[in-house]
Image 1: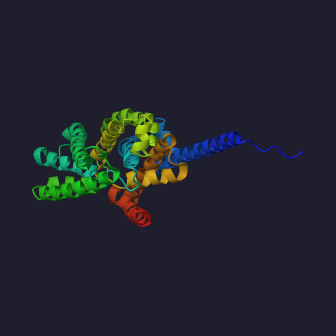
Image 2: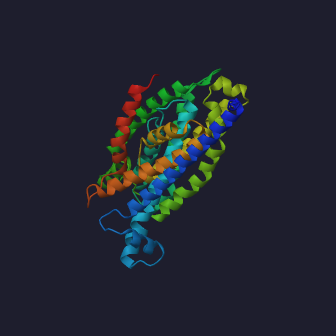
Image 3: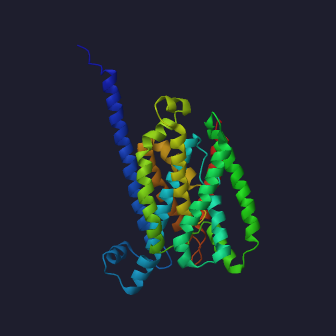
Amino acid sequence: MGAVVPSPPHQAQRYKRRLLIRNTVIVASFALVLLAALALSMNSGYTRLLPGDIVRILLGGGTRQENLVLLDFRLPRIVLSSLVGMGLACSGCIIQGISRNGLADPGILGINAGAGLMVILYVLLFGTTSFLALFTLPFLALVGAGAAAVVIYLIAFKRGEGVAPIRLIISGLAMQAGIVALTTLLVVKLDETQFDFWATWEAGSIWGSNWKFVLTLLPWLLVLLPYVLSKARTLDILNMGDDTASGLGVPVERERRRLLAVSVALAATCVAVSGSISFVGLIAPHLARRLVGPRHAILLPTCALAGAVLLTVADTISRVAFQPSEIPTGIVVAVVGAPYFLYLLATSRQ
């Protein structure tokens, strides 16, 4: 007798099982790479710390100088860069999902520029006092980014048709150009100290490198990221097109507005403490999508881990490449991100 040929349902189950195992391995691999990047970053700097020294310090056995180097200087910045990478990557993934455009990114669409406009207004009015910046900059950046997003949405909205993804992208690019022009005019009014602060922020230097800034950003991520994960199926349906999503009972415009608001909040609060870092929200979703596919239930966690790895490695390079000086993290990301964006633009079919 011949071999029994598996029925199509059995083949589908086997395929789903293999896909689940494969995606689990990929997510676990990203988690291990992130741990390795964190360990490498803790060991990198002007003062070298061996892996055994790091474990001893983390367990409470470090000297006063070792505690100062690792716990007060390096570790807050490392944790902050990982959190910012997660937030920016998920923000970019949401925007790409609701716009159905793989070239979308919070920095490209003017959301970061809106946050930056409020930052420069804050600097002009209140100076560069870090104590005030700790509590006010995330909210002011959210206001600026939210205002830019509202204007972009209203420009892209057309009665009877809603928001077409291509109009959303074009409106965002136009808004970014206008905000950058206005920001350039305001920069002229800054004094030397204010300009130094603005230049540091604009270049994407992770300037809020202490535990207070980590605790400022962490609650936003703890609230917003689980909400995004709960909307994974909605993002999958929106990717099918507005007509299909409406036919499946999804209130397209309402869900798009909510997800856009969450994306803006993630991007604004992240850039408020890290500076204007672009391309993380472009590269991480693309890399994750190529590895695990378009289903957001697995894409979003993979994207968050990829963004954390990308920004942690970039920040480590920015600290050690030109010791004892350092370059802004945003420049390191742009060195990789700008050519990658041009590559995607050249190979895009639309």
